[in-house]
Image (cartoon, rainbow, N blue to C red; front, side):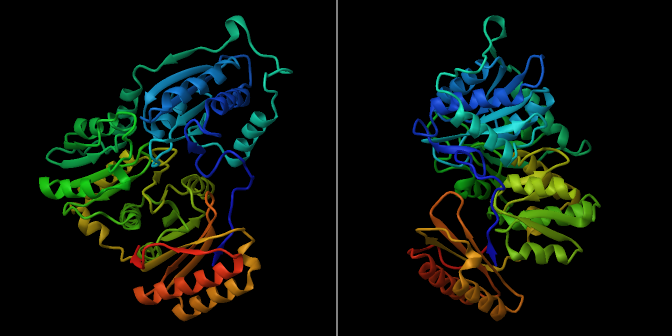
Length: 473
């Protein structure tokens, strides 16, 4: 099948997860950050009461300048700012809602290298802003006069002020601990926690230690430039190796803003993201805690996830790539659990966005409740062999308007006879199309992906750039 799904509103600055780019290069500049600050302040002002916006960030050196610029723009519109300092993205979502702020902002480029940075916003309910609101913020940025003339700005006592939330870390740690079942603890459990030198370097170890675990810390010495460097969710090998060497019960690798994680079981084997979701969903179904016996995943999740849940009477609803779209589908359908293969796991009963530390706590609760190690729990899903090829494109015509491509896809699907899946989609951030094929056997899967990629290449006059060869997952 072809995936032509895209955000409802075309935006120039915002992507699938906020604004992102190289720090101090347009659009990731202090000027744009200040304008966005004014825009979000303008958006939330809806009365005479004093409005407030929470700002958090990860550990990048560029976070200092962008934090101040964003805060200045907000204060210039008569809205106060609450600064949390380095904290995970889900912590800002939590603080925004719990402190009754009018909005929240996170300065982070997630898993990107330290040279990059980004800005994303949360509404007062702790959920990410929808596409149409981000489009309105962009309109404000692009259409307002450079000097702000024509708009009445506050003066004197009505100018906004900024102050620190001194207990932000403690508030978030307590909130996470309260999400763990009250009748369980982590006494006698050894956990390797790799914080990627990122936003969770204080909070994640504290949560597990205060619940009784012995924590072996990795990636907890940020210097502004080492975030995600050979550590964390992008490089889980060191975490997995440490689990083996220390005989730990679990390994956790977070990304730079700690909204996703990669797990290693007690043998030191890195767990497939879809296998973790399958295990959790199966457990929730058994405990009658999965509404409609349904979870939400993206089009990138392995077909093995669906097959695994079908065996226990569950099903998977798929969305386009991006955790925000997973959350939207969950809220619309009344579902409580969803996620992405990459490690964004969302428990809407406990949080409004993906939270790597919370996901680890839920995984630990599952293991303790079932009295089985993680290696056994994730073995319930067998991933289909998967091949992915990136095709460089010079243009992006609608995929359904390419008859040769559609014919090639149908031929492969017929060949697999229902025991496989084909997905072709355009990248939302790069001049590429992505071909994903899953099938019953690795060699056939790779051959099918190559066939489709060649047809697509000819159709869009680009050149193919093949990803690693066929793999399981």
